[in-house]
Image (cartoon, rainbow, N blue to C red; front, side, top):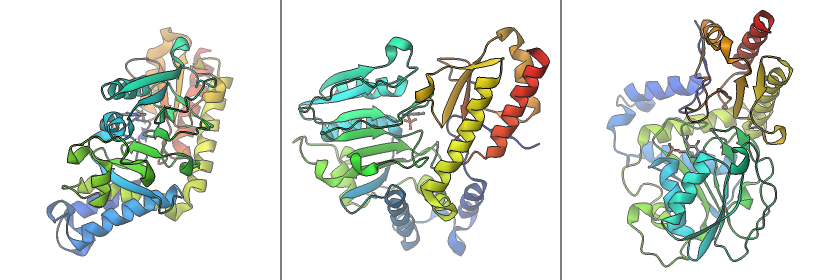
Length: 354
Ligand code: PMP
């Protein structure tokens, strides 16, 4: 039976990427050797790293004033590494959910943090629109997509200070004005590749301002001077991420994937809004195109719904353990067909129980 993978992360990857990545584990580039058993300094792998870095910048339409790195430690390390590299006097943060709160807590270990807006008052069901950005802050940090609660920034803050963004759960899913950001980071395991690497893209002129003597591994400048290969990189995760970026490019680029993602999200939310059994959990203008959160109005029939989901091969729809309900993660590689299977089940369920 075909399984429809709605996992929130690690999430679905394109089948062709998985197949090619799997082949590379046995025989990489017809070399007779596995990708996992060759030197990361070999010409073949150096080309993979170079290609991955260049595709990331190409998909974000960034020029030579930006660098792209593939580091380790997940987005969680970036919560601390970004302030280590950028925070001198104080930083401004907007709190839109669990991950933003984590970023704030880690930055506070480095220096002064002003939380200039938060949506915690209404359980993170919206994105704040009223805030004043302090012009004397070193940077403003936001989280573009709130993976757990299902909200997403549709328009980004117009900041005179450097804008820093955690894009872990919506990187490469839509066209964004990437050159308005000074630093973007994203764990690979949702829209880009397997867990184990984190994309970090930054404008070169933001570095070197804190005077901090950083550990080598945590220094963006050193990492880029070493071409993202200061130490042994996570070769498999970088290779699979490179294949996914190439897949986006070959199919028509960000415009193509954004159009597909919009159709998927529209199909899903239309069902939620018209189906008497369900309701969405976040305010409509801020609904995420990546993680659609919803609840069953009558939990007495929850088991019936779960049974129907299972019968249809729908996997990974449960909401995050901290919020409950359901979460329809619609990452880039999820086909429209999977959304249709889900919405059909929702309709059939309503026909039986409404
Ligand atoms: N930020 C966001 C928006 C996330 O969704 C996640 C993880 N799911 C993280 C950060 C943490 O990422 P990691 O596990 O790579 O540290």
